[in-house]
Each structure stands twice: as C-alpha cells, then as structure tokens.
Length: 106
Image (cartoon, rainbow, N blue to C red; front, side, top):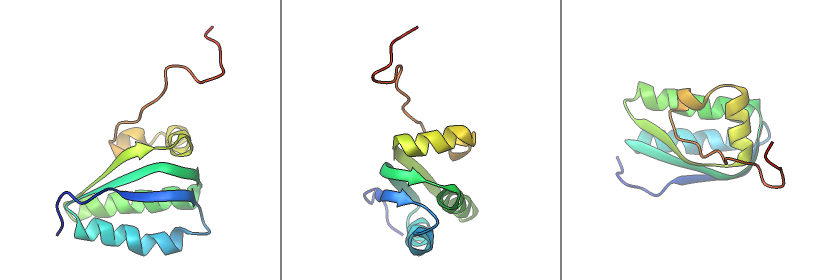
C-alpha cells in the first residue's frame, strides 16, 4: 500500500463514454492507497455516469477502511456536486468564489 502518492488527476469529460475505462484505474487507486487524493481541476464535464463512478470509488474507500479525498475541483464538478447536494458526503472542501467573474454585485 502506497503512502503519500501524488494525486490521481482526471481530465476532460468524465462521462458515460469513458467511465468504463476509468473505473479500473480509480478502483485500483483506492485499493492500493490508504489515502487516494483526486485532482478533478481539469474535468470539463461530469455526467451522471461520472458521478456514479466517483460515488462508487468513495464507497469502496470507506468499505476498505481507506480514504478518498478530492483535492481540487473544476467548475463542472462543483456544479454537479452542488446540484446533487453531495459536497458534504464527499467531505472535501470546495472553493467557491465569492463573486462570479463578469457579474456585478447586487
């Protein structure tokens, strides 16, 4: 089991078209690391299949007595987590800007 390994970075669209390819990699990361850190900062799209994959990985980490921590979130990931009210379940801090760029304060 590895300790202090670099974060596993997912990039691009994490959708139904790629989750089968990512599943083995993600579950192996959970199995092989007492704490798997995920960098999702470069995820451009997250659909329900991608969300299910992240949920599965988190559930497997808990089942195995391991931890899965999301260390960086893209806007696409934050949007889906907010929509599905899953920020607390994943238990990871998300950085939410105080004001969206190009928007004026009320």
